[in-house]
Length: 476
Image 1 (cartoon, rainbow, N blue to C red):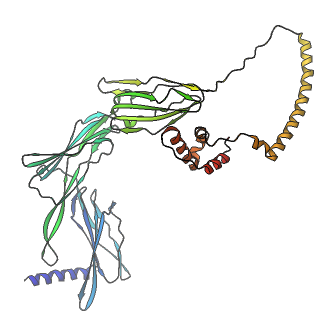
Image 2 (cartoon, helix red, strand yellow):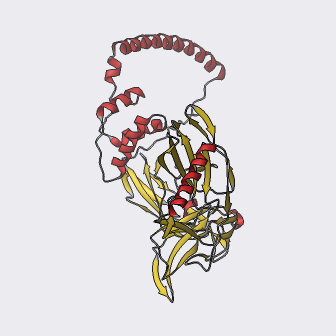
């Protein structure tokens, strides 16, 4: 009887290959959103040009495999191929027929329908996931926590597991705690905490977390024998719905903060840099705070990218000038959740003394009214003097112009100009800065100059490249 069963199975396989050269199937036919399905093509023929499939129903192929076997029927040998493609469908769809070239001819498979059901939490399963928010209604940027709890039965078996975190699209992820484990009755409890903040107003959804568990099963092969296999099953948490409200009074920042600004020196030499660190500490949407870079007339200001670590925001700025100046106060407006009003915090202005500063004096000309000449006489004399001076200025200008052209032609004039000191890195930084955004080579040199000027690390400069840039942009 066993042999008869094997004969029937083999005959059925041959019958399939006779009446259909390309057969498409999907397993399972119905899956839960996020789970993996397998699409197979069974191809029979001599020479087969295997199709290249990268997407199925708009979903990327996650993995592929193939099997090849040779069968004989009526003294004729025939190759059989089974091509498998794994994908994770997000919604129900119909997989279109696939064209396959067999023995030089185009053959098409049948179309296959795959059904996708929404993820549903099973409270009675061996593995139960729960998402618990600290708040469901809050302001844009307001921090809150989401607790993830996994309950696993002690007698539940698992060969392997894969955890897929919830989709926090639309939220800032401000922190994540390490998982802790404990035991309670028949369950092992695992807890983790996410700290989030909504990025925009409206009704936001946090998609379910997913836990994939692999367990051992036994199934029959094509010959009817038992063989061990691993089967994956997915367990889902609940989804969360959060309502994010806009901040009152057109505020952009929410929370409770303190602000400080610290300068590394208050007295500098001309064209030396003052480094200032602005620090904001507190709970809130630090990610929405813009650069503190101010505008100060006659002062070059450089700002670094804002750095956020935990509940601390820092930004470093550098100020370069050749005269005394004052760094204005840095301020921050925010909506305080405790006081329910918009508050403003500020630092104090910082006065910087520049030694050897170039003070600009204004020339004052005072008219002497002690002598008054007759109006008519003065008018006549001025006309006469003006004609003489105009003629003299014309001759002198012509002579100077000829001399200047001779100097430029001979190169003596250019050689007499004072060359730019390539060792003065701070002066070089100021001179090259205007060309930073339009020349990649200048950008690299400016980055090195800023690093050398405003940090303890020093990096050597290529003098040849510097000379080429100075010549290219006519920098003096």
